Each structure stands twice: as structure tokens, then as C-alpha cells.
Image (tube, rainbow, N blue to C red; front, top):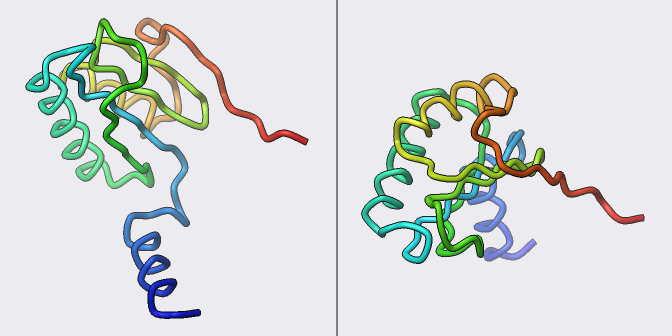
Length: 118
């Protein structure tokens, strides 16, 4: 393993890839919502996940291709899509879905878990 590979492995370890149970993608706009709304929800998601200490990866996306009713939060492996995720809604999604393992049914507008081919 070369030095670049070692650095990549160290980064993957640091961000929690080996222990992650879910991955949350947040679209921060600017098509589905204002950049300020998206960034406000992103900051809330980061803080709430850190406070909860759960093994969830998070990624900021500029577009999830649903260009209204944002910010959008997409949670895998369940493939649960949440629209209009405000910092307040984010807190409930983190508590119930990302910590508790139960999607917030009243806000979920779609589900499509990705399954391996083969």
C-alpha cells in the first residue's frame, strides 16, 4: 500500500465508513430551495448527528433532481425521500429514523432501497 492509499484509508476510517449504518444525502439547493435554507438545514443535520453520536455518513448535494419542495433529505439504505426538511424537521428525522431506525412515515414521499444486482 502506498502513502496515498494509506491516507485514503485513514480518511475513510476517520469519517466512519467502516461502521456506518446509514448515509444521509441533503440537497441544499439552489433550485429546490434557497441556499440559505439548504445551508441552515445542513448545519442542523451536522450538529444533530454529532450530538447523537450515531454511525451515519452525511453528504451535501447540490441537486437530487427534484427541483421543488426542498431541501430534500435522502436516507440509505432504506432509500427514504423527505421533502421540505427544515432544521426542526431534521431533528425529528435524526431522532426517529437515523437514531431510532423508524422512518418518519408522514413526511416520507418515496422509498426505494437499492439492491445489489446479481
